Length: 466
Image (cartoon, rainbow, N blue to C red; front, side):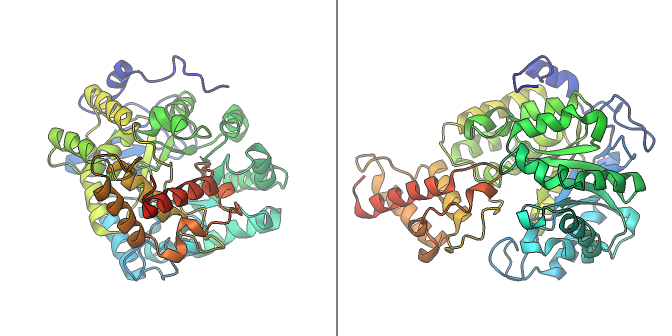
């Protein structure tokens, strides 16, 4: 297989033919448990309620909005991914209750999220509801070599059930396939140690109802796993997809893969798709001002983020779209987008592709704020540094020369914002280039190189030597 675009890919014309101006075709991806049809997900959204898609493997009626549990709120009001603050369990309970009350039934977590505390918080919140009212998705996040042997990986799997307070998992993923050394690391984590064989047996026994993987990085691993579909029979696959990554993921970072290719390879095999990073780490909810104006001109009442969520949900093989919702207003806005989903028209799809093309004029760093690079052994706040740079770039506050018009204002905005966003002892100039971070980055960013570049840029701004 190759990444070459072929006639499987969705053109603008076929997009509207597939989606339909009024919504998705209702025929598709629905079947009795254990039976797969060569169709796409069926959809239902009665009377202004949540839109659902039907999983062909098990007949699960899954909410198109999935709750990503990577960003549970902390007691300090921030995401628990940041700092060392405890998860605000009372707020987690409130978010889960509100989500379930309004039709959300898919909750995605991992042993690696929220510094290892997400599964427990998720289990506490969900266990207060009937077990058949929600679907649990978690991952075998055996990233560290110390967890690659069979016993350690199986212990992690069993601990997930304990923390989540369940005796079966609805959706189980091999986590971060393609990361690190690509195929070599995949085999070490799942093949050579017998762990994938174990998980396949667990699916056969019913303790895993759907088995899949989340993909980051080396497309050769993605292609390999799909080539073995007749053996592994993946029930679903999780990919990064949004209107910027649709055609520009590889241009943003040569090590990434365009979502158009990933989606179409899965759709051609009738494998349901779970979407992560629909907002590209928040980047598509914080677009440049001129883009905001264009979005608001078309739909004044819609949020900027809603365009990205509509894009992700409009594809017929998408089972659910994950969103990490730290605050109630995030949840409420996403509910309004998906209750019911107003699928994109062909003209709107074309418009968003034009928006993506304009956004590519900004040479941003493809950081999604996943924090897999953290903690830095030298205390550097890597995501905050990269995101501040991207923000200033989008807002026109990264002058290339002191001769530029508005230089003084832009210089002040960058430096003042930098000190406010990142404490001085955690800024880029403290990077020694140890490179413990880059191997863990799903976007394959050369982090030390970017930190040194930003440090040099900041020093020139301070010294006025641009």
